[in-house]
Image 1 (cartoon, rainbow, N blue to C red):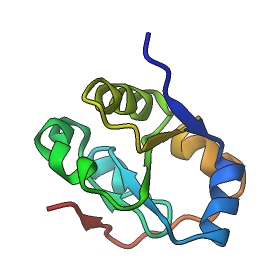
Image 2 (image 1 turned 60 degrees about the vertical axis):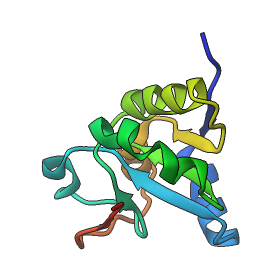
Image 3 (image 1 turned 90 degrees about the vertical axis):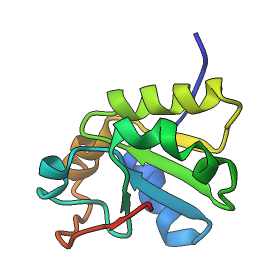
Length: 114
């Protein structure tokens, strides 16, 4: 099985404070996203990732992918790794871990990846 890179909610919160060289991508469904996002995240439904491989291959930043529990984001990172793209990191525990850690949520509509 392909190993993926993961980051904890606490590590991500510290990384967000210390750098702007990351990009957050929420791969949940639009209905899930309505419940809140990590501030600054962009939206890209998981099923569109295969159509956006060029986006990931040309990204100048490290990409943090998250979902509800971390399962789909891990799967997405494995998929990207299988296609030779190693700049994606999965948020371990997903947004549930983020919120249970007491970290801030945003409730505005995220930008979408075109």
